[in-house]
Length: 62
Image 1 (cartoon, rainbow, N blue to C red):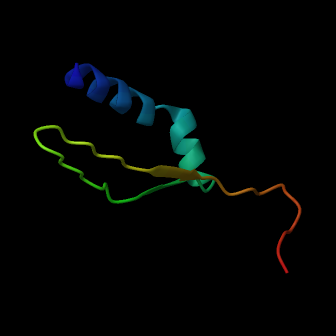
Image 2 (cartoon, rainbow, N blue to C red):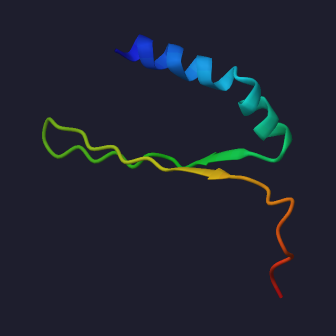
């Protein structure tokens, strides 16, 4: 199952649309996972934030 997911992920990031997004300001920011090991079961939440530059939006901020 992991091999299929890896292949699907590789196919996705090799798409022209993904490359275009990166050149347009797309970024991925990940956080370190927090590993909780209560007994013999591990719970590992992890976070991923996808940031995209808004090149057509109105200026914001103070």
